Length: 248
Length: 248
Image (cartoon, rainbow over all chains, first blue to last red; front, side, top):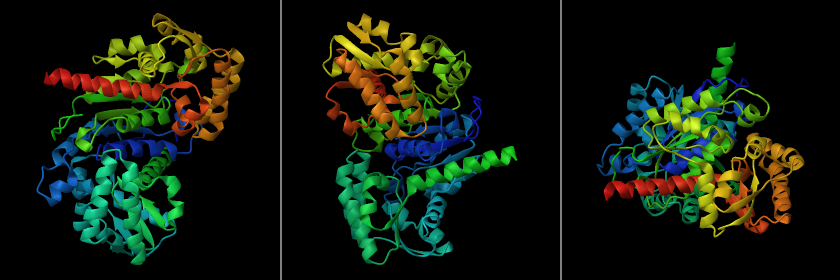
């Protein structure tokens, strides 16, 4: 995005990753792949803290497990010390702590649900029933429901049985690098929401887009919003606006 | 690798990336994909500084361009401040400054050529003629030649015309996200070295493995050493040894 050969790393996107690690690294990769650039120096500077030792976000909220907040705050501090200008968190469930993270971070954190809503509009879906797949905590605590409602959408959520029998094992399989095991489970969850009337499906846990490879998506015949790609595009747009503002 | 749910990020691998950015992000991704882990907390902590604004390494050495060293030293400093325990640099040409980087870094930097030699042995190639593909600077300044000779191999290097007509445009295409354009050029360079007697080919510029997708490699019928994967495996082994040493 910056055509100068300056070695000043600005603007720089900070990625608080590791939740899971494949999602964190994939987000850094997608920022590169989705950027229009002809040579190295036109790409976007990124600092990724991919700390997989952050305690499980869903367990903390649904089973009284250890809080991930202290580890996430340390990650934010590392990113800010490294000089980043904005922060993205490629973990939907982590956004249940968004307000505490933003309060501790002097740089803007781009909210993943806002990125997803922006991506729905980019794909031409301006209203109606939207299926949301995610972790038990994300779905139970309504991370998506209110924000979708405020933007003119209505969230459709899988039943408790489907969350446990399809989404929980699919997410665990991705975290263990067993992508092939995850795929049919996620497809079943997508088809079930489609039968209930969903116009589009949000892959609202960053493990879920990893379970459904890009080349298999057109065959599913429904609009999918990939929360990793949506966040990468939001970061790229943020950097573009920042460069424009600074050179105006 | 660390089964505890501790949020202490140790041991942590630092990745000095951005050279190019796709290679840096892919290395972070391959560390995740090549790690045997059943859940997030068993993966390896990584901090990636993916700064694409580092001046071109090959141009600095062959055309008197701006030195990349100050920018690389800043990146190393950022990684060390973030608490990493070792550093990898997913750019072969950057290793022409290896001694200066290591002198400024209190943590070990794993040398990419050592990783590649280790990978050749892992693949059962213990001696003989090895074709090396890379940037003009890497090949002209002999980054691989001496180290391969010291380990019982003999380096075969493409001719000057092939470097300019095949490798330079292939590397530029990857940096511009045009993978499909790069593939036939790299295959032609591989086949040429094979005809000259190479028993294996080193993809000795981190853009080159990106030009030859994993699923198309078996069809080429020759042992390939991928300098990104070799470095990722070296980092994973380093972390494994470190954990063993600390728990002994």
